[in-house]
Length: 311
Image 1 (cartoon, rainbow, N blue to C red):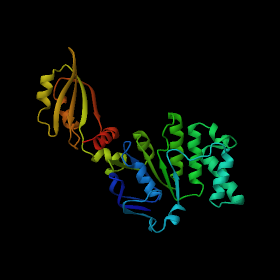
Image 2: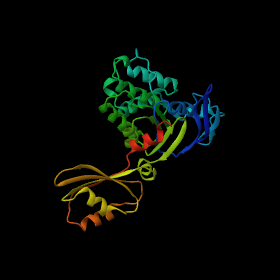
Image 3: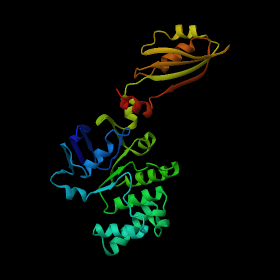
């Protein structure tokens, strides 16, 4: 559906996007994830034809964006971080105006507005001035605007920025519903949003792609330290060290707390192998009482921090 090849953008001497490559299949919801200033918005603006790349190529449905920008814009819908709305217009009048610009007329226009009002959940505010709406409703109106031409590809830049938790959940549901029929690219720096909404996550840092895959695959393949938490009764720390010593892949045994009868320890390791069976087998051979046995998997937050931290 979309192919990005060696895409680069300079602002004078600043390289905002540095030779990135990725492809997007039809029907995918892709999250462009990264800290502020990573190059997310610049990338989306180039994908929509708003910015001219310094070098590289973008193809949408086989069309080159340099030669076929008008054809590509007809199949794109774009919602910037701050929706460009006319605050003195009623919601219905505004969407009616957008439909006219998109050359949607007659009964088709009214049917399209009604469909978008249902899809975006704005029926109850259709006759209110946009300027009097909450930010959540303004985002919904902006989303309806972006969807007016029934685009095949929807590009959303920080669609939940500045919204409260309830509004974030509502916008997320709308995106998931739209994603059943559309290809969606959204940028965000909110990890929970990307994990809950996107089929695939592309992490960008300092203009470069540093990871690409589903949230689960990123957790499995990104090397990082895993933690196993144990609480045992009738054991001392020294005997635990001796019992668990020599397990392949185990890097460190740390005492968290110790009382007369309870010992809490953390086992750290970077191995991709599951060490739990061997740890359990060795503890079972003792007379200790195992009260807690919990393995913490690599979190998306830890992966994000590791991949995007400053050198």
